[in-house]
Length: 269
Image (cartoon, rainbow, N blue to C red):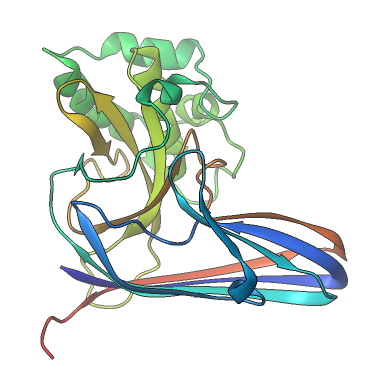
């Protein structure tokens, strides 16, 4: 499947900043489940950016804006050919060993509720338990926009029983780690069934299963990623996998606007 993506991020300030620096994880990798056919990032000074792979293997750009500015626009666009591999991740450049992804973070630290969730999940093997965990998280946490925020923890979202894809992923990751499996947070794009371009920046989880490798689980949609998914970056949680992170000197009252469009592209010329 050919998937076209447009991801526009705009930062506007009430008072200008005199310096800012951004780390962009806005370049999807090519691997067995997807091939990047074209991809560009446009923002001030992108031609001077330092390109590197971060500690999780993500393609990253470090971009500085050294002059005074009151607004910055970051535009990532491209086309990716995807293949349905039933969530199995092969051919990806891995930098960190799988055991790194057992590390807890404030967003994924378990509590008694997470441990009780784990205790309720039974299965014949690790793969079976992960599928049942995905079902359980989906059933216990209703998809509701606006009730959680960027810093909501897995424990908080599970207790409230409401959240978005970020929360489903954090809960799944926290529980998988309690069950002894390495698990990581993945952000990317999701192509909906609509014929119109959809706002579909999305998040899901991946778990390392011995003998199989990394396998994706999207508890929000109750499915392992298919050719409707485009993988962008991964990390221990949403913070370490964030598409854009940065800091600035000066500037006040930041207003952030993000627009993401994902659309299937015809193969006909």
